[in-house]
View 1 (tube, one colour):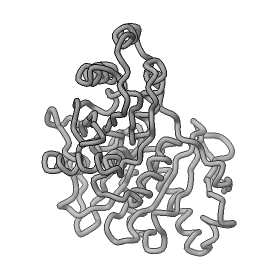
View 2: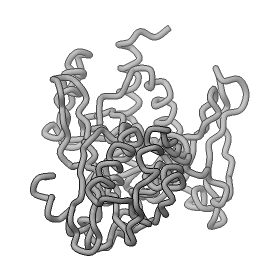
View 3: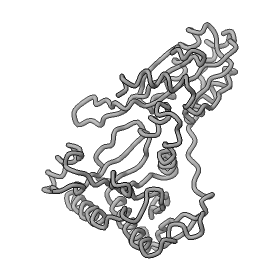
View 4: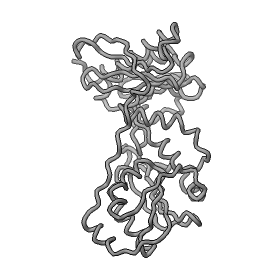
Length: 344
């Protein structure tokens, strides 16, 4: 059985082989492929970054949720306004493990300390190997040791795909609508890897957010509230500035929660929380909004799809329609722009 130190050394040796192969010279980050885990059966999705000459990495997106975080990131340029609040959720909502190749100046201090503990160091631009996990609402952080065996395998499979794609450009797009998935055959302990192709239409759907169930206390408090014609918007977005509560503790990006009056762009209520805490804060937040308005609106607009899902049952119970927005509405981008100095 490999010791902790030897496992890390194996990982860094494999990552160095990938770095030296430099497959970004002939591959693009829009070309993705899957690798199916031999034990869990879940497929992770890989893309090779660096063709633009800015960020060299292998990203391994975790399952269906990770794949759709990749799709959203790829589509981020479609936002009409740089102050679209959903842009921040996309940028800080990635769900992947990443091996990147950095300069000394861009290598995080926790990675440098870890390398030093292993007796490793790198020299030169783009030579430093940084292994991090990306989780929604969290800053990137040093990879956990338990993830190493699978990431080592992903690096090996990515090198195999990259070498074969260099010689056969049809590998990643044989018929224009099929996606390559590397699938293990045989025993999980010694798998033999094979190519499978799935139709693009058969890619997994994104796991739906779970609606927040209204409590009886909430239902009792809104039962006699008058209905006010009109609508409000709820905007939630992660701040670019991360918070680190203690040294060596992973920083996180607070989510700003705002209720906005669309006509004048006035903020009716606000809150701030960690992203996973948002569903549990909605009832109290809404009660504060209703108190300010002296009633409940007929409609609530939201730009964040999970937020629409979280509010689904609450909206039904309160007889409020939940409307999907794009985030490019001027009253939303105007609020974000006015807060941009604080956020940055």
